[in-house]
Image 1 (cartoon, rainbow, N blue to C red):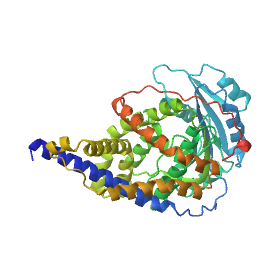
Image 2: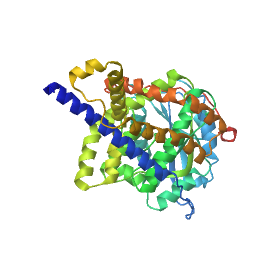
Image 3: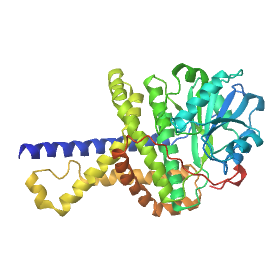
Amino acid sequence: MSILGTLADGAFIALQGLTGALSAYQVGVSLFGLRKPKDTITHAPAKSFAVVVAAHNEAEVIEPLIENLQKLDYPKELYDIFVICDNCTDNTAEIVRNAGAIAFERFDDTKRGKGFAIEWMLERLWELERQYDAVVMFDADNLAAKDFLIHMNEKLMRGDRVIQGYLDTKNPNDSWISVSMAISYYFTNRMWQLARYNLGLSNALGGTGICIDTDLLKEMGWGAHSLTEDVEFTARCVQRGIYPTWAHDAKVYDEKPNTMKASYNQRLRWMQGHFDCASRYFWPLLGKSIKNRNWAMLDAALYLFQPMRLLIILVTAIILYLQLVMPSWWAVTDVQRVLLPTEYWVLVNALLFAQLPLSMWLEKANWKAYAALVVYPIFLISWFPITLVAFFTKNNKTWSHTAHNRAIRLDELSN
């Protein structure tokens, strides 16, 4: 075997081994999401909240959210609603004030994006006469379960400092794209987030439905300006030994895109931001996890590695396919065909896919979502070109807004 062939062979085998190990790891961790511990409320409302909503031209959806937040089952004197009207060119601010919430208008053409807007808003909050025990963050297209703050109060009273709520879907039945997103979130909520909560690992912040202790925010600052400010703040917390936790019963309903184009743009921004955060936080977290023998830090580092894992899967799949259709060419290069038998990959992927309907059943999904499992593989495959494009455009920092128009109220939700 030539030196070049030996190197190529070793690299290909290493990629297969890494992908196989990470896939098996995720299957194993997911099993701990099968059990849902009972989350008992033992503390009366005591914590005060600044409920912050990030909004950019959200005139079509902001009013139902404010109405929803004003009717939460929590003492009204213990929370206030603030809306960041960020570079709005519509009448979002007027609607917010007429609905009875507090509007803060921000205009900045140089620092655009949700991360900068949140940091700007926090600076304004710290200047107020009234100070709050925690900050809760929503997006303008959201709706929150009425007991959301009850669960966040409980977590804070138990000593948790960063909490992620359950991310549900506001419009699962709008299109095959929105229901595919809903299926993804059933899996993520149950087999990723709850599983890690049960294991005592760090949970991943999801951009909305977040509660953060005020003293912690003042101590470490927001400092998350990437396209995925949630991923960045998660990494910053884990670096400090602060592990975000999970509130499975604190539900937030999020509007999902209805078209492939809108979904593509949203997911491309997510992947670009994820690659950016991974380039800055993966190696420090990995090194620290090894030095301190800390599983939670290692798992958080592996979360940052997920987009690269998708690319490795894509590369290895292409190589394996080419070896089947062009065996004579690959024989010249001396590259070995496989490290792990085909049966291994079939089993791992079958177990991963089987967790989709299982998580849907555990989360009591509507029957319409099960029917969408037929087209869900198309949605899954679409992640590969998105991730590939994101890898080559990861230095893009331009925020792309996802338009929202589903002005649904809480009592109109159907799963």
